[in-house]
Image 1 (cartoon, helix red, strand yellow):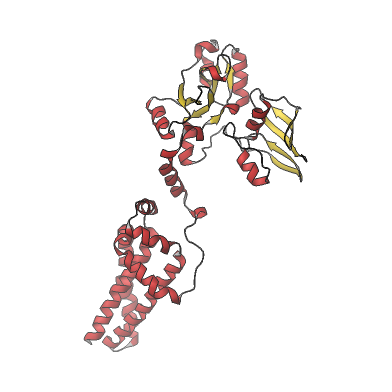
Image 2: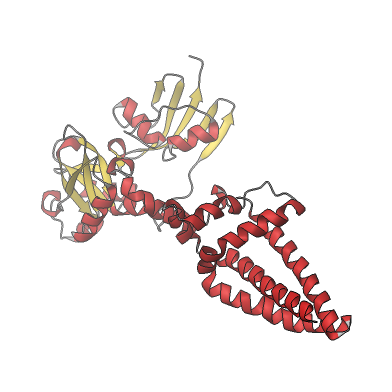
Amino acid sequence: MNTAIIITSVSVIILALISALESALNSFNRLRYEVDKKQGKRYAVVLEDLLEKEGELKASLRLAYDLFLVIAVVSLASIFSGLFTAIAIAFFGLLILTKILPMAVASYNGHSILENLYFLIKAFFVIFSPFVKKDNTPAIQEREVSGEMVIFQNALNFSEVKVRECMIPRTEICAIPQDASIEALLAQFAESKYSRIIVYRENLDSITGYVHSKDLFSGGKPIREIIRDIDFVPEEMDAQTLLANLIKNKRSIAVVNDQYGGTAGIVTLEDLIEEIFGEISDELDKEDLIEKRVSENEFIFSARLEIKYLNKAYDLDIPENDDYETLGGFITWFNENIPIEGEQLKYEKFEFSILKTTINRVESVSLRIVAE
């Protein structure tokens, strides 16, 4: 009798621990785990390999639970002299002691349980994994990482990002000379759909500020009188520092200067925030980007499609450069000017027919790849 009681008690404790560990694996704080792993904490290092086989790990814990449940029921049968009584007690008593209570505790303290009992998880895995079906598919893969984890990782890496990595390149800046008419400015706002337009004196290397769309309601004042001040920052500045400065000074845009003092591009508050949270859409963002394969070597593209995307999706091998990001920026860069509609351009093996343009940029093009 005493032996049966001891076996039952030990089995109940082990069952409770297994239930707590299973619940902890489902509820632990993965963000905190990633931080602890980077800091080299013992529990996180040990769990890293196990979580790569999460399916196999959980199967091992379930096998261990089933085994000790059978042991507990058999022991109870010898104590109460009846299998039916033992099963009844196991169903009601063990359900509460080894499932409901441990899982309730683990749901609120899952991370602490993993930190302190990780060695038990390792032990159960080592003992029972040889008896379960192998799972070669990692449970935690890059493509399955939650949006929260992606944001967290971006935030960790943000301190290493330079302004030049998130700026709008010079070739894609929407700008207007400061001596242009208000009518021209109004037309540019209408065509570009931007809320801010850069203003320059002679060219983009002599930017004097920017105009906001709401400044158009300033009573017909000339552009020179409604220009807003703009900050100038080096392209090697930390994006994190610039973000803090823009927020502190209540600014939303800055000009990025290259090492020679020329304009490399501009960066907005939205660009910096998107480095952490990903693409931010608003009511002015256009989703109807055109990408159509006409034949094996001929395409029609929206010029706002990114070069990196086009190269990957269509294997085009268009040159990539820090001076531009989009197809339209590339065309403006090598042509050294914004082409007009109907113009034919060639760069190495790429032939472009300009299908549509606005005052400040190319909108759509036909691209044909020819033998060099």
